[in-house]
Amino acid sequence: MNQRRNIYAILGSLLLILATFVFIFPVLWIVLSSFKPGNELFSYPITLFPKNATVENYINTFNQYDFLLYFKNTFIVTVTSTIITLAINTMAGFAFAKYRFRGRDLLFVAFLSTTMLPTEVIMSPTFTVVSKLGLYNSLWGIIIPPIATPTGIFLMRQYFLSVPDSILESARIDGAKERTIFWRLMVPIAKPVISTLTIFSFMWRWNDFIWPLLVISEPKKYTLQLAISNLSGQFSIDWNTLLSASVISMIPVLIVFLIFQKNIIDSMMSSGLKEG
Image 1 (spheres, rainbow, N blue to C red):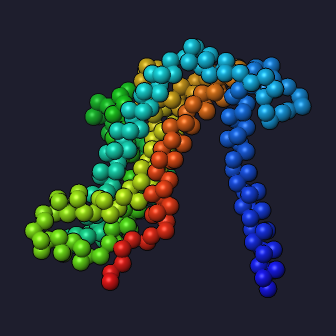
Image 2 (image 1 turned 90 degrees about the vertical axis):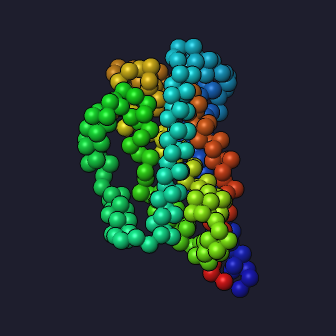
Image 3 (image 1 turned 30 degrees about the vertical axis):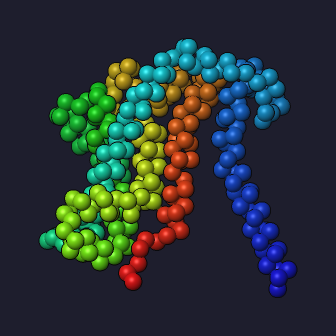
């Protein structure tokens, strides 16, 4: 019996290693290829590791294009949007989970049902609203529309539902106001799920392409993804620059994930506080 379990464990480990390699290989190929010189990129036979590694592609990326400006625009959009998203989604999730008001469940179901609509369906009316508000060709036009995400509100509501009501009642008996209960009691408790939402929100906004493409028309306000897409010309593609720029665009998302990954693991391991 033990021998059979060991065989299953080994097979399971091998499958996990294989699956990990399948997911990591494209990223690894892009990173290694970004250090290859131009004549080596399409040489045959194809090699994974560069024979003559160089950082010239990265230098050319910053010299030929104003990537620092695109980086700054993307950073402003992503950080601002993430902060507002966290604030709104946390407050909305707490309200849906802990307050009783007429039509609460119906409103939540209606709000949640918007996740079933394809993004393309709501793009036209959203663009009209953004244009009427004078936010066209503005970074705020990218930031404001997606800040109240149904997925984020659902995530926060489900987490707050697992928090016992007795904690809130004890705080109210001690004289704490609702604002104090939320910011000093509920927000610290929800730190693991807030970290998870931070990673998702940061990744969504950083990698967003379609919406900035619709809203932004001036090159000086381009985000990083728009700038990278412009490297693909109609008749030719600067692959060396494209690969190095793609690697640069991955770094902030990776840093954010490494910072908050511990809290994600904690969030998975604990299902919230349970009523004693």
